[in-house]
Amino acid sequence: MYCKNCGSQMDNMAAVCLKCGVRAGVGDRFCSNCGAQTLPGAAVCTHCGMTLNSVPPGAKQKSKLAAGLLGILLGGLGVHNFYLGYVGKGIAQICLSFCFGIGYIWGLIEGIMILVGKIDKDANGIPLGD
Image 1 (spheres, helix red, strand yellow):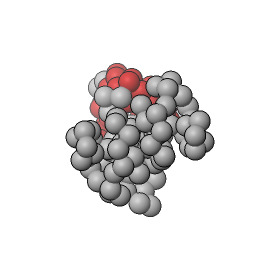
Image 2: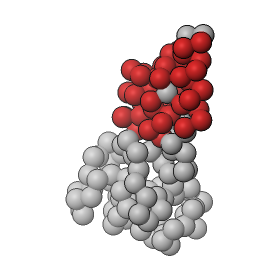
Image 3: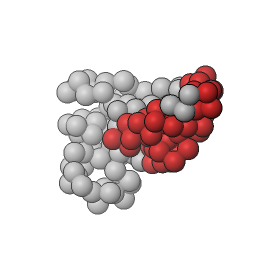
């Protein structure tokens, strides 16, 4: 793994880059797969073809942990979907919970899917942060 801020090679389990001190996964100047310099706003690395999942300037990433826990604990009320911007889906979960009681199971499953990375973007397509 390479630092997305400075391009230095990092240990895969490192929380921060030892060279520049930036949190692992933060930055958009270098590819985390090969360490090659990338262009600002690029969707893929031109050197290795890896998807960069860059966050648009000014956009705020939602927390993966918060969304997952909201899904597990309050999923029947669709709270995690409201948090991620999926308003229609959240309303559907509320209705299914009160009418049939299945919204809770749906929320639990989605909460787990968020935590394991199967659901990894919010309603605006912005990747969830750590």
